[in-house]
Length: 370
Length: 140
Image (cartoon, rainbow over the protein chains, first blue to last red):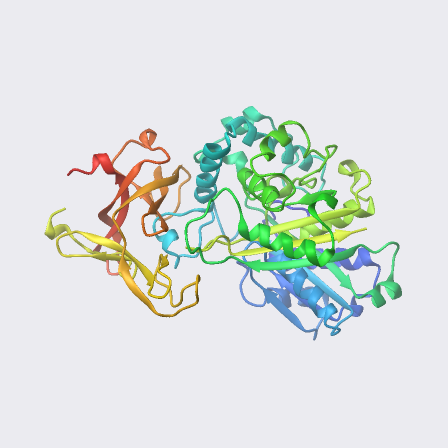
């Protein structure tokens, strides 16, 4: 993957090509072994994946561009895994890229056709409302919520590819610029450019090209949000829950077996909702668990050791692929200063998009096993 | 609101505006199972029936949650309050909050639908949209 951050001299194809070359180099294969490509992005325009391949001289391959909001990159990985499981291909590349600084400033909003966008919905505003309700329902304090960006930016300081490399304090969070009450600037993931790529192989190809111990994709689950028949609590995520149950069943692994997770912390409150929706922590209990250090890299169940979206950055299409890169690095024992001890099972969760009347839009849960 | 100030609905499929300035948010009611949806749907997600009728919702509800948006957006001046209101039909609808100070807003407060000037259409004509205001402050 590329360094995440602001890349004024590159575009989405440049970044995607850099990530692709890194993945090929890591796998130690001839790039001509790649049989198919899936490219996840959101705002980069038509045929972004083809523009990536043109940069690196790979022509003629079957390629699909995949859009699923912030789950686009993760969806590209799932499509790659399906192509292998179907027996169609043995070596497939999934790349996710986004040059977001050239597309957006400030708050992301739902598509302008959406009735909620028409009355002023912004993504920070929606998550702020969920934070407010969670505080009301479960007694979470503002200081407890601030501990999540503190944790994730502290982790990011240990990740050389992260957007932010400076640890912060609770006071920094509380004194940062108000965005949507109760969320401040440090509660929000940044506008980031970046790309990541992974190569998936069949068992047969892994034996042929194997460079050490392969990491197994034990499950890759994808679900869409269901239309609300009646209003449900906005402090619990049925979509995250359903997608996780699908992944746990496919992997034959339960939440109690997960050693660490990368979850979609687009906002501080989002990390709370994700880990509780995944069944990794009981509902209402995560803020206190963070306070006790349970989610730290050295804790019982590390959450977002890479720095997460808050610290590592959030280039929409790149995000889901970068999560899987982090899982692989941790499971191989190659995570350097942020290495988790004895990590055997890692989980990656993405959730993206907003549309009126549905509880979440696109959600992915992937489980990787050493 | 006087009749002369009534613009056309900013989104006619979602907000009915009558000449006297009154109106309702519009959605679907399933004739088969009774579920309600906002906005209008083509089929019921509860029972999958496509026997739906378009109905106007109650104008009184309860504030489920809210936020004050302070980061500027291209479309709206900040700060503005945003909230979700639960209506008796079983729908939760987002809107801006007007008619009170920002620090008076609280979860659980009774709200009423308020039709208000809301931007312009593509030809520059004023349009009418909606906000929610506290029920106790809505006697005007």
